[in-house]
Image (cartoon, rainbow, N blue to C red; front, side, top):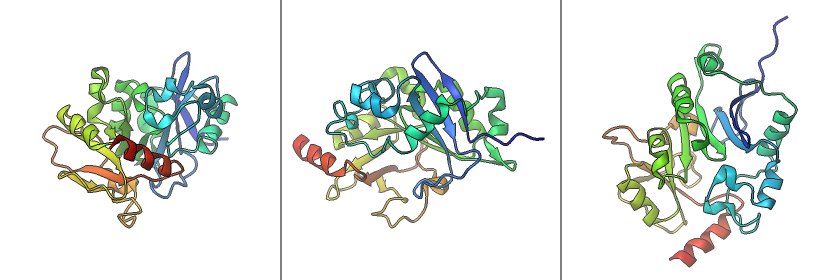
Amino acid sequence: MKQPKPNGYVLDETDETVVIATGFARKSANPKTGDMIQVWILLRNLNPIQAIKLGEDSKICFDCGHRGVLGKGRTCYVRVANAPLGVWKAYRRGLYPYLDRSQYAEAFARRKVRRKVRFGAYGEPVLLPVDKLAELARVSDGWTGYTHQWRKEAYRAYSQFVMASCDSEQDYRDAKAAGWRTFRVRSANAPLEPNEITCPASEEAGKRTTCERCKLCSGARPNDPRKDISIVVHGAGAKRFERLIQIAA
């Protein structure tokens, strides 16, 4: 009897972190992204709620300003008590087998149709080795991804796959000078930069499409003519983020 396809796979593990891809057996319920494979970066031995309370989320989110401090003042839109916690629990129960690179092409297809991938549904995609990320991009039918680590030279190679996450006009200018395409979160009244467009899947753009169909947030190509993307701050921490923007200004 043929075994049912698991809903997730382990893509990479270290002593502290694990990278997991989900959405193979069940469709994603995320209305903004659409039906994409979701990649999660989690701590192996500490659930995501505890990790935030103890400040250990720095090991998967690094110095991202949206983390807050020990769970206080958090502006990240990800509700870790929902999907990230569920994925972590399933991982701890051994429900996700390890997926070797040689198996990527077969696994990342549904009925022989290649899937789209969302790198970093939670956590930093730079924790997935760039050779593995590149192979996943090669076998997929498109992808999206974002990193706050664009200032660090060690992660320059990721610029061809993921967007620089920017939280201010200065971030935007610095990232562009470093050769990245950008995804900037801005307040509702802030104007777009000359090379930016509003995220087509956003509420303010009328939700004209989904990330699955759009795929603009896929890093920078040589001489890339595509626009940078911006979105009005949203999610559970939106009000806190608006205050931080005002203070910074």
